[in-house]
Image 1 (cartoon, rainbow, N blue to C red):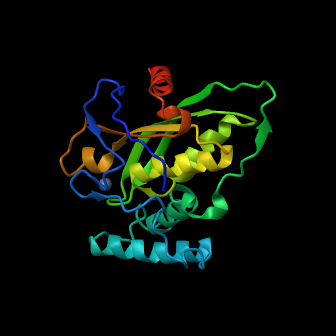
Image 2: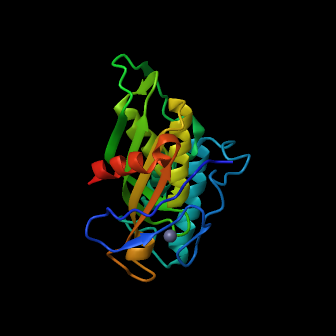
Image 3: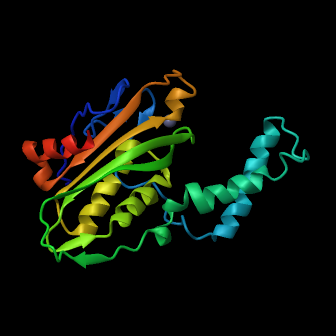
Length: 234
Ligand SMILES: [Zn+2]
């Protein structure tokens, strides 16, 4: 059982906010959230990256062909291979556990035991329901004890979980769980604010809304600590 509290945050700048609550398993009209683990098959990594790219290129070519596009056109003929490479090596590379960032911890030599906040970590992800971008910022905080983490590693953890077909709630939880495990502490907070292009560029065509999700664990469940964190986010 995950000890989680959800919250409604209102610090997003000047835009309408779609508020979500992690205790609900539904977001918006058609966005279902089924669990914290990305639903992967057991045989997910039996094919090599090269084999996956060949397969995806073939099928993406079929999609383009079905749409009526002329794949002999100079501008289009390389697209299936480009998309396949981008999927496997870049935007969905975070599916593969082999690509998980290696995290080294350092001794907390300064005995710093206050809150550390790393804010405005930009990320690009993709909605798993529409395969179009989710563009956002993650804000992370933890209260360290004996060990501290290199700051760039916080960024790398966010990027790793962003590079999957995602649901924002799941991404929030995955980052929080990873931080708790790596930092060996419950005192972790994660706030993510993001624009979903499946909402802004299609469907309801709402260009101004953003989605905010949050996770608070350990000391961050304390209202004062939480407010201090939110205060830093401005
Ligand atoms: Zn979507």
